[in-house]
Length: 512
Image (cartoon, rainbow, N blue to C red; front, side, top):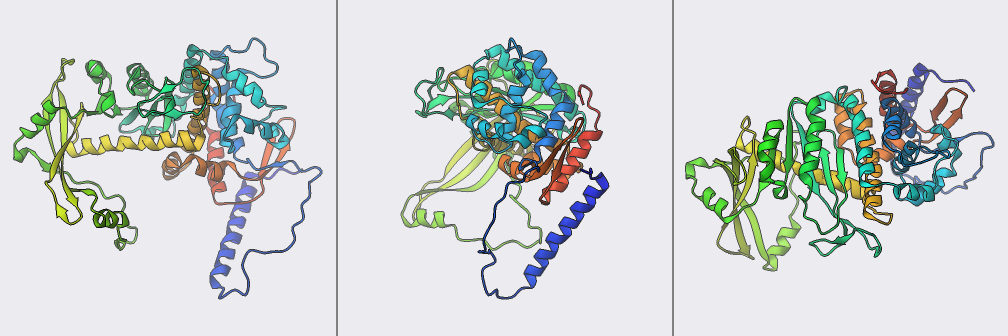
């Protein structure tokens, strides 16, 4: 079968795009239709005798990126979980789980359908892939040191991306965010699980991520009853050591649970930080002692700007109306002011900048106004090069990590805890989080900077739908596998852009 050249592929893509636009144009010219646009005619199904096709056309680009980065070699070199390779290596098991999620799978059992898909295995260059049973057994071979080695294998290849197209995203400051989340389970025999402060049984993973690219740097599974900050200092140290050599400046962010004052002096020598700080009575008195002239209005950035330059008409606030009609206690923000002062925590030798936000909140029941209240929010930081308002904005921007956590939970399904003990589930979480990281790495290979930012911020399921679930014909030859996209869609252009970038990039440790 004749191979299509790059030039011909671009022509085919442009022709498909013109045809789709022409259909849309015809649709706009139509008047009232005599019948519904969805047809009701007969459908005939056939199975081709020789055509080998699948619906995961984008997985080939991901496989090529993984190969050129040298990730399989790093995994096999660091893990020694299998005494004999019959026939699978450690990297085969790890990538098998990550690719399953990238192809729309949600659990280990979904590997069964991929294992019966000859075109999928041909696209990965595999004669056969591990079964769900083998994948589950592989997770039980880990101990804590092995899980750490697996994460360091991922971290060993990241700098190649950060020093390439990712360097623009890491400038001028690389932000490391840290937070804990609950991974609930209805199971009763999951070793290591415990009850959280919310009364939920499960685990309490710690997640350390890089805000600039959305990557998960470290993921640590813990019993459900431990506080968020337990053991966090060690993993923050590791993350700073990983990112600092490749960024002009590093800033660590976290909420009040991560204001670990005993480590502030050491961290300030290696990186900046912005942490929330508990509003203890002594801190509130210190804020109340500030002169009124020390407070400045806090101006928030608008949530969005209209492309047309015209403000949209606001719709009725239904929730507000119901609260007012029924006489519920209603709190509304009147205004915000920001102030600051120097503060030295008891466990620190150095003095740090304490930024305070004062919120004036009105309290009402129905139409009756009650006494207004003042609330104070504190942020401690080493950043003295920016305004107090900017410190608040950067501290609030850390909340975007909640989107990463939500994607790991509902998008990737990394928190499903499908196996039987804490370490095995930790291993699964890390292998599943690789699927999310591969999305970020894929985004970094986009040609245009705007595309890189767009796909870094994209939800996981949207990425899978746009970039992976592309129907294609698989043509396997002795030295090359060709994936011929069958159905055109606009995201195919971005797929080809990333693929060409990957092919012409000479990674330092890639095995090509």
